[in-house]
Image (tube, rainbow, N blue to C red):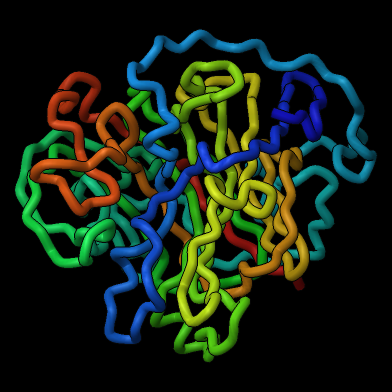
Length: 388
C-alpha cells in the first residue's frame, strides 16, 4: 500500500491511499455483461457493490483492530488545501462547500437537490420504487422524511423473489433473501458539476453500507445519442461520491477495514472487441480506486461528502477538503443522483453454490439475523450545482 498524500488540517487528518491489485473494490454490480440492448432493464445492472476476489479473502473473519491514522508526512500544495479559506459548513447559502470556493462560479440545481424539510418525499424529483438487483430487495417504505432529514432503512425480512444468474446463463431464478432496504434516485440526470450530501452512517457495523452515488441508465445514454459505436467508448458510467462502512479486507494489515475507512471510487463498462467490459476498483485501481482513512467514525455524526465531475478530472471532497482525484476518461455520460443503503459482509458472499449456483453474489443464510436491524442512514440534504 503506497501513501499518495497524507495531511492534517485542524481536527481533520486524512490519509489518501492508492490500493493496487484485484482484491479490493466497491462494486454494486453483477459480473460483466454484454452490451445492453435498448429493450433490456438497465436498472437491474448498476455497479456500486464490493467485489473482492472470493479466493483472496480469509477463510475466517478475524476481529477488527483499529489502525492508527498515519502521521502527516507532507504538506499538500496550497491550491489543494488553502488554509486561509476554511470550508463552508453548508448552512450559509447554496454553493459548494469546497475550500476556497468561488461562489460566483456555480449555480444551484433545484431539480436534483433537496433539503428534505417536507413531511413526504418529493416524487416529482425522486423515485424510491426502483427495480431490484443483488442479494437484497428495495422497498419504497424503507425511505421516508422525518424531522427535516431523509431516512433510508434496512430491515431483516425473509422473502422469496427472483434474480438473474449473472454468473451463469443470465436466466431468472427463484431465491430466498433476508433483507430489504431503500433507495432514492433522481428523475433527472446530469453529467458535469458538483454533487454533495450531508450524511450520517448507520449504527450497525459491519453489515451494510450507506452510499451516495451517480450512475447512468441505458435509456438516458440512448436519449443523448451517446451509445458506444467504437472500441474505447463507455456504455455505463458510475461515480461513487462515497460508500461508507464497507468493511473490506485489508491485505496489508491482514484485517477488515474499520468504519473510518471510506471508499470514493469509479466504475464503468467500456466497449472492447464488441464486448462491454467492466473497469472497476478490483481490476483497475489506478483508474478507479480511492480509499480514504478519516479521523472520525461516520456513524457518530453528519459529514459532508462531495465530488466535482469535470471534463478532465474528477475530484472528491470530505467536509470541504479535497481528498482524492482521478482523470476523467470515461465518465461523460448522463447520470442520476442516488442515495441507497446496501448489504455487506457477513451477509453477502461471492462463493455461491447449491441453491445459489449461478449468482455472482448471494446471501449467507447462516449469517442472517435480526440483530442490528432495522438500521438507518440519515441525509440532512443533497445539493447539486453546475458551473456558470
